[in-house]
Image (tube, rainbow, N blue to C red; front, side, top):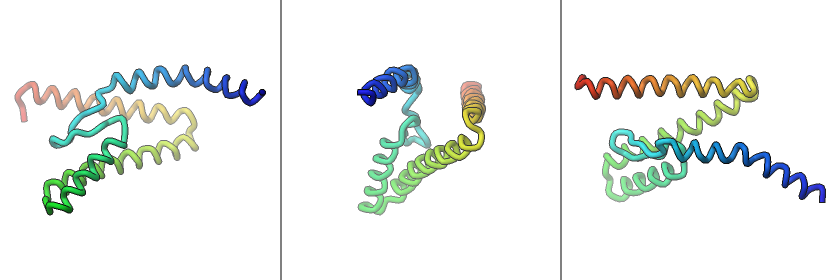
Length: 125
């Protein structure tokens, strides 16, 4: 009986994290592109599927462009895994303060995207 009550408490507490997390994931621009290849920026499964499809097509048809596309997807997946590993290690040493590193990286990314859009809208480059 106590175990059921504990699970009930965990579920009700987790809902305060789950709802904002789900909403923020839904509001993000989840799909983007890199050199014309669509990729999912908030998940890894779709990228893995697309990468394997490109790799399979490259092997079957010996098409170098498909192989390069598979490499792009592989790079995205590798960077995701490296980021997750780095986050794990940093959390062990810095605790919850690690989130500020993510905030800083997101801020730099936003500034770079804004600068890129400004350059493209000015007609430069």
